[in-house]
Length: 461
Image (cartoon, rainbow, N blue to C red; front, top):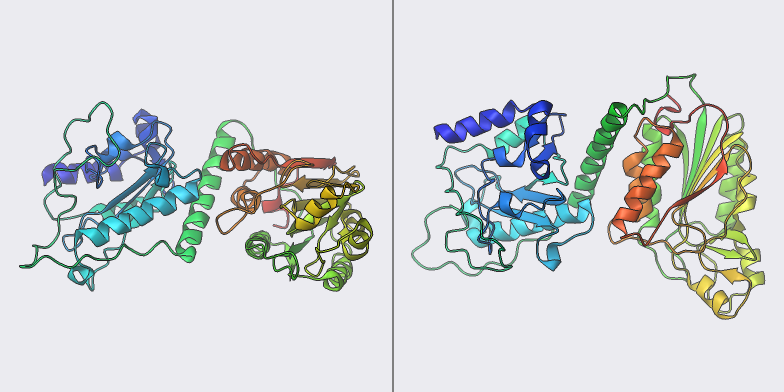
């Protein structure tokens, strides 16, 4: 007991200097800004179901792993979930959010297998995410409360084997729980998968914490945020087209647009949000925005959905565009060109985010007919004062993503909070997208801004 309490006291008193003495793979930062070390947690020496090694032994050297556990309360069974690059293929997720989802799902499966749900009825024994790629969504107090227990400490795992085998038998009990019933309990179904709302909350927490860490790192490197200048008037037009009548449905653009609108509003920027717009609705939205944005210092346009190029001209695809029998002429008549859209942004400084290079059946059909259409979007000649950011380089196709947001939008949401110039932020976005997609997608920028540094998170404050 004394050893257990001392370990908790060490964790509570951990400082940044102490974290730096921790092996890098075990370091993490908590939500309150304090630092911790995996090896100081009382569960570091617990073994995972199906493994003969402990948590600390299985934590990848890269530090890219997620860890979840049930509360260490007497009424709760021991349950753990770990997802990282050394785990089975089903858990070798390639992004922080997917690793977090896998760790939570594995923990809940272990929780359901440890004891019948009726045995923990009325208790708060659900698994929580503890660490994901060096960041914890919990504060030090929350983590301490989650791992506190008056029950005897779990015995440490044996010495690590040179090369643990996936699926190796675990001779010791996986978790301590209530005494078994006189008759074996029925086999329980697998624990429910992590819900979309839970995963979205985890992503938002991790994105905010990662942005805070990056901001702190930027300051340490001398990348100081620009001095606060005069408050600027900014207005944004955010469009998400996903429910196409003839081209199938894209699941993410609507969510991408809503999340981006919320992000910009949190900066004090006024936003016009338009979802699933046909051509008439797009034209009307542009005209209305032009009137509302008159006199603004900065205009921002965000578009998520289908886009294509014809003859070197980029077109935004309304939800009513037809795919069958599409021709160059029909695209020009029913699409809205990017060049025309820019004419509705009256400010001298314009920022454009285009998540519009998704694989488009109309574009594929036009390319197959050897028309003047091309793959993805065409490069643009940005005018002075305009910066245009593509989700991927011209002539390439962007991914819609398997999560709630596309890789590009997810990276934008995670990095726009940084108190850095937009050019630096977009470099960070490029790095994040390339990492998340295995270098299959590389965001690109065109245009040229002038004047002082432009920090979107402080633009209207």
